[in-house]
Amino acid sequence: MMRELLLIGAGGFSREMAEAVRAINAVQPTWLLRGYLDDSPALHGAQVGGLPVLGSIELVHDHPEAALVLTTGRPDNYVSRRLIAERLGFDDDRYATIVHPTATVGVTCRVAAGSVLLAHADLTANVVVGRHVAVMPQVVLPHDVRVDDYATLASGVRLGGACHVAEEAYIGAAACLRERITIGARAMVGMGSLVTRDVPSERLWLGSPARDVDRAPLPTVLQESA
Ligand SMILES: CC(C)(COP(=O)(O)OP(=O)(O)OC[C@H]1O[C@@H](n2cnc3c(N)ncnc32)[C@H](O)[C@@H]1OP(=O)(O)O)[C@@H](O)C(=O)NCCC(=O)NCCS
Image (cartoon, rainbow, N blue to C red; front, side, top):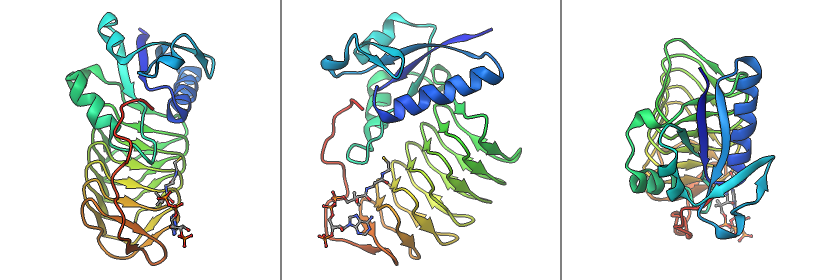
């Protein structure tokens, strides 16, 4: 039976998510995708990527049967999914796990509630992905990688074997990590970086080879909308 689905957020990632859900439904009708909830009043009533923005996030309580996915995560607001999940306070079974049909997930891999694998993401062997993790297109997670809750891996990220991405960390597009590297909680790695050393928590590292830059790594906009 198809289950209702609401996307929390109405930005670019949300539209990507809607496309992933359509691709899933084309293979096997699974989700009744109702639209988005977003706290930006300017979006309320608008059509975004062919779906309506139904109203603010609080409206979720009017749809108790609907599964949810948190689809926020701009580079300048990458802790937003944790903030929204804490505010809503739902159990894991309220959240859908969305895996695009072209993603590959080895049978020894695990992906927790609320996480998303977009097109052509590859999880090879013994990969563990936590809750509300965003894995963008063409990310490769090889053997023994662990990605903790609320982390974001932008498109084309390449991790070496047994890397560990701690909670709420953000890895920019096409960054590449040597094997067994740890990225600390809420740390950010800039796009295109080549990471050869562990990155401490709450630091911003950039470049090739990546180095600490003396700038605030945390999002400057701690808002909850996409
Ligand atoms: C790291 C990042 C957050 C810095 O953004 P910012 O604070 O706006 O930085 P600026 O653009 O002001 O650049 C500051 C300096 O850092 C340099 N820089 C920025 N990003 C860099 C990167 N990834 N690697 C190397 N140098 C970088 C800039 O060239 C600039 O150098 P300059 O002062 O010598 O000209 C951003 O560049 C980034 O990588 N974001 C992730 C983007 C991404 O992956 N998006 C995908 C999802 S949509």
